[in-house]
Image (tube, rainbow, N blue to C red):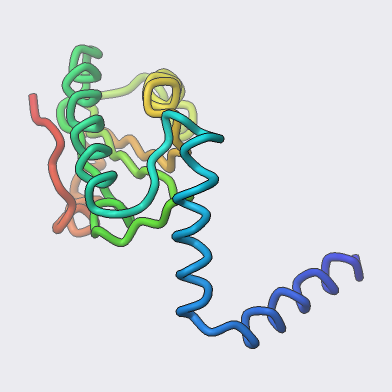
Length: 149
């Protein structure tokens, strides 16, 4: 237990000593030299990579629209806001006509594999039914719509 506390406290001290500009500079170097060779299908941060990622997501959502019952696909989170980091994840939201699964986690099962295998990126994914949609409308207010069927 104390080992984790020591690790956490050391991280806090390192963060206090480092200036944000230095951290950002190191992140960009990591994006440039580490991500492309280690993850050839991954994306480095920056606008060209973001455009490529959004294009890939839109194409993937069009393909995902072939799943029966998917009505809409949205993007939320840092990528949707243009605040992504090189090692971040993608946050898709699917609106379903209905689902036999009442448990949200089990509801994601067929869709999560589809997206993660094709994007080769970490995902934080949500799926809601049309009955639940009003709960998410404010959440998706500024989110880009990727497709609607």
